[in-house]
Length: 365
Image (cartoon, rainbow, N blue to C red; front, side):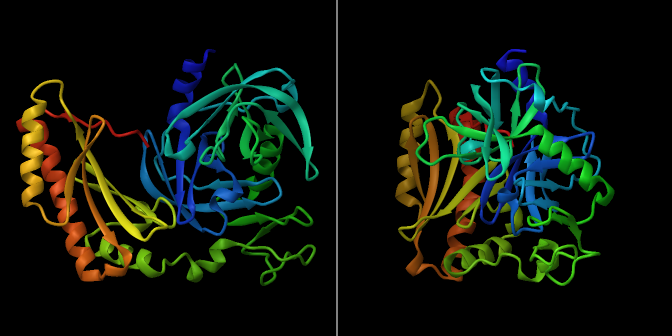
């Protein structure tokens, strides 16, 4: 199979995962009815937001954590109907084989990077890894490593800081081992003890200790009462979003980033390290004709608008708001975000229907 055929085959089963700590990639295995990802992508969360090309964004429980293999299994929403993708033979991977790493690096959905296997068995921390030269970047974690036959031969796991296109994938044999060991506990919360490698569940855990060896283990489902709670400006932002009827768990894209849908518009809110809270909506794009008419309209609107402003980034028309965290209160933030959300949806429709702007094609989940 060529690269495009592999991408087309895998797009339906590639899952984007979002937690209060950040985002990552997963993939759906129909045979096991589970979403597979890395443990470090979901660690400490008993549920995460999942979305895909044919999977609306929803919260799903984390069933299984495996810190030894850096694997995790996530439950699948009912009535999910996605295609079957086969696991390949991990032992058949050889140095020089062509492979493709698929994932969502930096939020760039369905990114596929071709490369070769630099070393089929590179030992690290007592495990064998597939060393590849295909770029694996933040957000790729948990995505599949695919061979030329369109089979999954590994789980993309890590990169070496400062390494140039140097990444590692967990061989599929470890994944198959974890799937088989978890099978008797399907849909139950479980964790592999990193010390003795036994499976620990909510039914047999001894307080916070492994019943087999006494090592401390963590079952996130037991700690639901201590789930992530934002503080400071992030807490105020989430309180505002809740007041505006938004599901903050689904909106989170990390500890200080949110994505909101309002009508036909998508709004991205980011609280940056300089203390500014930016709300940006890329509502539509400039047309090839009548650009002067649109610019005249935008300039007139900017003269009258309060708290929000239009700008043009390349061909994109952007409606934005900006608040400094020292001046953020619930009341001022509520007024600003409410205005931004309403105007974003309004202008998105107006500019397309009246001025011939080009509807923005949002990236698929």
